[in-house]
Image (tube, rainbow, N blue to C red):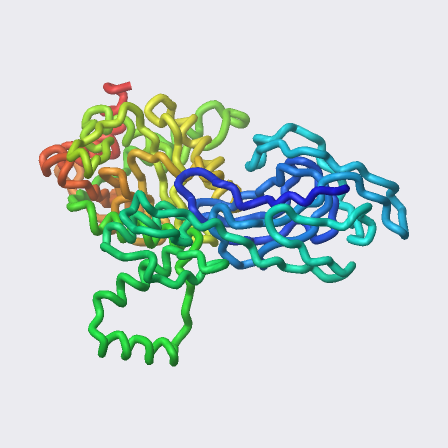
Length: 457
């Protein structure tokens, strides 16, 4: 007799609590192997293919494409056991794997070879399917049946809230505690009454309104005007992070114009040396990244973070350099790991790899987190300057404008030089203006006279 097992959306790591279904890779009636990807989801950080740890026949799917599910919500059910061949039979019988691997992410499976997708009609199962967790409705050959998932109710005694509350996300509980909100008074909008972050945020806003304001808000909501774009996925994650940065970090910005003529000449010499086959070209971004790592070695205060609860500045031992990249999915910040230990060529190669992965939407969550300092080249948008928002929880960001010919006094005479504006936005808690100014001046000196950098290599 086949046994029906329920596969729930696993914890994808990096503090992620929900994901949006982008594309189903299997249909009801398909035979799946252990660790075969069954759905593609988009988290706040990346697109991820989720493999199923069970092998058998898919009997139900939960959620349509475009729907957000919290971690722990059911994804699909799989009938595990012997499967009879289809009546029309062109493939013969298949034996479904009797157990799961326990793995949840692509690349960490058992290494079992993938199998060709094959549809098994529900009537072909050797025995009625009975789910031990949630009832499974019999499925007609051409109809996928959605079963309402059962969301676990988690007691919230540790919150100071008595009684069971339908909450999965610890972030939701923390937000409620911060605003003295009783979760028992909320009606969740998630599956089976699950309380989502949006429910808590809505309750916080409503609590700050007078009854007349609340009524006006309800009336306005009943007659929405204009296009509404959901803040979710990458856009929602960016919005949350930038808002938190503005709330928590007392930032300040200083800037300087620098003559980049010598830097561009040095780059041209590097790329012209060795002739064909000498390796990939060195980009301006790679040169600036290498200058940043040298500057951070001299001014480690800016490669740090603030532990708000402990009231401590944590100076970090290594430089994990993030760089801003604009993609069709929005702004992302891939991270070059251990940039302080890399050469300019190595940094450039890693920037190229991560940029391509960002454009194709294949960046892993781990490649988008853990940065200690960010380099933001907004010059690609044709602008000279900016005051960027710090990438929380980092302490600083270097912004680079476009490099353009401008009148410049060079060696006592007016000349046309290639000039760039550099700006440093920094957390004023980790250092004062003297340190920030020293960092920025060193970067500018390296841009104007690349030989300065050689003294620190």
